[in-house]
Image 1 (cartoon, chains in turn red, orange):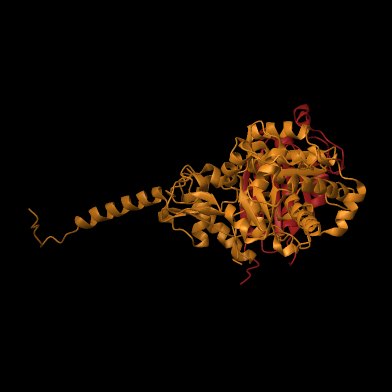
Image 2 (tube, rainbow over the protein chains, first blue to last red):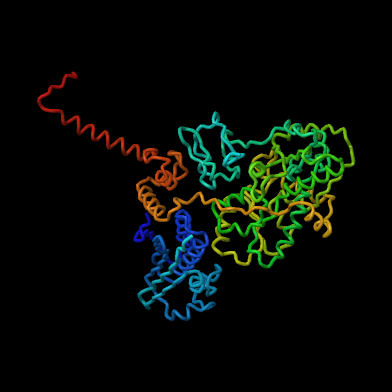
Length: 146
Length: 439
C-alpha cells in the first residue's frame, strides 16, 4: 500500500512586515500534519521550525513562500524568499546574533534564536543565500517508524 | 459501559437543526444530519459550549436526579465552591446546613478537597524533572481537549486527582470511621456546575473508578435548596472547613494563586485556552511554570449548569472567600492524607487522535489531497447549511465518507442549473418526424 514516491505539497505566500498574518502559515502546517497523523513530537518540531522560518521572512525578507512538502518518510519545510539575502550565514546561525529592525524587536523578536532554533528542531538544515537575490532554507524531518 | 459516555446529549424533539452549536464546538464534534444535530462521541469533550449557545435548549447535560441519593443508606453532599456564589446574602454555613436539610447526612466541601490538591500540586511543582509548564488537571474538559487536540502536552498535565475525588475519598473515610458504617453504604454526590464532571464520574480519566456516586446539577438543586435556606430550622454549629484559597478555586486563577508560583497563566473560556495551548505546544512560552486553563468563562462559576450569572457569582465567591474560616493545611496533615488515600492518577492519560485522517500516512496524504481539491470547489462561506461547521470540515466529511458534495446548497444549485440546461438541450432535440401534441 505504501507508495514511497507519493508527495504532498502545500505552498503559503508570506508577506514582508505583515505581523497580522504572521504565524498563520505555520499554524496551517501544524493542522495539516496533525491530520496526517504525524507523531506529535515531530509535529511540534516542524511547527517551531516553520514558525521561525516564517517570522524570519516576515521580519527580514521582502517576501516569499513557505512550502510544506510531505512524503511518507520525510517532511520538508522550504522557505524561499526574494531577498535581500543573508550576508554571513555562519554568523546568522550563532545564537544571539540578530539584525532584526527596531519594529520587530519591540514585538519581542530579534533575540537571535531564529536560525539556531530551526537547526535544533530539524534533522537536516540547508541554507543557501545570495545577496540581492534571496535565501532558500530547507529543513528536513524524518518520520521515524512508529 | 458504553464506549463513549457523555453527559452532554441532544434532546432531539427540541433540536431544529440550526447551525449555532456546530459552529461553536471547539473539537468540531457536532454535525447536523437529517435536520437534527448529532454529537460525534469520540470527539466530544463535554465542555458544554453547545449547551450555552443552543437557543432552543436542545443540548442538555445528563445529571442525576436529587431523589437518586436515597439509593444509599448514608448520603454525603460534596458541594462545588461554585454553589456558594449562587445565593444573595447567604453565608457558606447556611448553604451547608441547607444541604443537610435536603436529605444529606453530611457535607464535605469540595473547596476543602481543593486545599489538599493545592498542597499536593505545590509539592509536585518542586520536581525539577517535571515538564514545564505544568498544566492543571482541574478542568476535565481541558484535559479531554488536550487528549484530542494537543496530545504532545499530555505529559505536562499534573497527574493529581481533582478536588472532587479527594473530597469524596476523605468524606467517605471520615464518615465511615465516625459513624462506624461501611464505606460502600455511603453515597457521595457532587453538586455540580459542570457537565464534564459528570462524565468524569462515569468515565474517569487517570483512575479506574470514581469515588463519587453521582452528580446533581446546581440548576436542579437550586430551587429546593433556596427554600431550605430561606426557612432554616436548624442552627447547628456546622464547621466550615475550606480555606479562602480552596473556595477561590471556583474562579479562574484560584488554583494558580493558591500555589505561590510566580510565573503562571490562568486562562478561562475554551477558545482562549486553545489559543494559549497552541503557543505552549509551539514552545513560545518557555519561561511559564504553571498553566491553569478553565473551559468556562470566568472559571467554574461560568459553568453551563449554574443558576446565577457567572460574573455576579465570581464576585460573591471573592467576598465569601475573604470571610472563610478554614485554615491552611499543616505539613503533617498533608503527609498523613497522602498515605491514607489514593491522590494521584493511577492510569496514564492517553491521546485520542480523532482528528487524524488515516492510520496509514500514505492514505492520509491521499485523503488530504482530496480534501484540498474538494475544498477549492466549495463556496468558502462557512454557512453551515450542509450540516458541517465550515467548508473545510465539509470537505473532510466528504472524504471521510460522512457527507456528499450535494449537501452544499450552492453546489446543489449549480447542479440544478446544469441539469436544467441539459433538459432544455434535450427538449430541443425532439426528433423532427414527431409532432408536438401538447397544445
